[in-house]
Image 1 (spheres, rainbow, N blue to C red):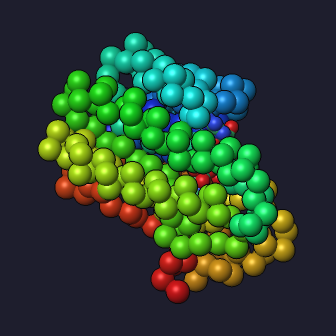
Image 2: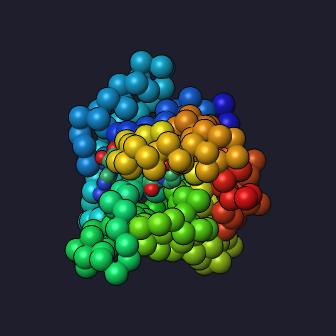
Length: 248
Ligand code: NAD
């Protein structure tokens, strides 16, 4: 049990990658704080973990709110007494739109969740981790944190910035035993990916050298593994989980 006794929070854990990451954390022995804006699906994730013999509790959190991001960390401290691991996963994908036609509203809304949300999370999580001598922050970026994709300017900009924020955590806090890794999934079959049109989705399978999209579990398992203390010297890294997508 590589995460035995650790306390881990996951944002956007009511579906997709976040749910899988929360399940894999619990399976690895962590006490998991599941958070989302959708209370029903968040509660479902908790139930799935409890049914599998794990420990988890739910707390409503909109990551685009600095107050709610602080409230989530406080909830983890009140419930389990500490915070060891935080996975900043919540994100949205905007409808594909040529860059010059993107409204400022769409730009702001995407950045408020996909980038500001990660910053608010880090800002709240770091002081709690410092209280218990360090911790691990996993930021869910994307392959689109390394390359662009037609019509996804706000998403691509946010995901590249998340890679930068991750390096910044290493530079600012490695000496205090906080480490961070940015994870770069390729296209994974989740609700977010399903928002793409059918033609794009079919083409996406073949965009991966493995000739298929990924499964949430293929991300969750890796995230749980790299959150463990055995990975203590890996800090500020970007790790693709992409079936070879970035190798072309
Ligand atoms: P999803 O849509 O399946 O799930 C996202 C979850 O986040 C939902 O439960 C939703 O309610 C929640 N959420 C939305 N806005 C929120 C907010 N403001 N605060 C808190 N929670 C919120 O998405 P997913 O595919 O599982 O994506 C999860 C993360 O993985 C995102 O950051 C996404 O960019 C990234 N990612 C996904 C893929 C993919 O192909 N699915 C690829 C690379 C990266």
